Image (tube, rainbow, N blue to C red):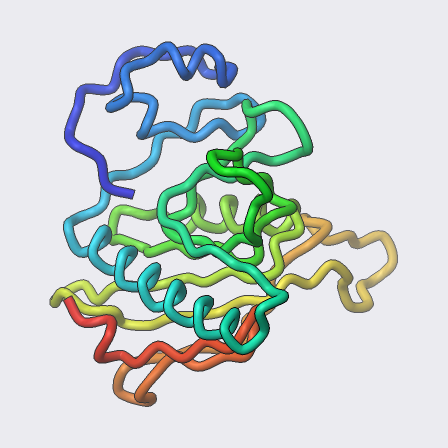
Length: 217
């Protein structure tokens, strides 16, 4: 997520949503609350925002095409929208770069994790692997079926790779006394790089076909 540069104030380690709302927008917009813990979002370069928007545009087009073929279905693609965990309360949320949700019955509703089909993150050089692993684990614990990870090239304004992960809520056999760190996790189900494919194509959560030419900076 990209934000204007502002000096970070000295905030407590934990806050409520109500306390977060009292902060200026340019500060609050840089913060996620992980079970109330303040987590600062890293600012990305202009490419980060551009590729986020291009992925959103492609997913939006594909969702509309899928809905035309099956009018009983309804999906919406969004960018930088808060996902609130749990059925109530707002002090536990993350803000993915792009996402696809089921259509909500009323306008201006909060998006809950149960409403989300797909989340995506555009990884900038400033993102640490530890941060992304933890955020991906939070999506998995919330039961979000699909996770997309977009890696940018370091030497030019282009996407290096897109990976798609499917939620796995069970695990394989482990030695006695050994337990998985996370109760749910994602399995890699697809990987695309520009030199090896003409488009990102998958059938889930609905038919998606996004040519690489639509993802050029």
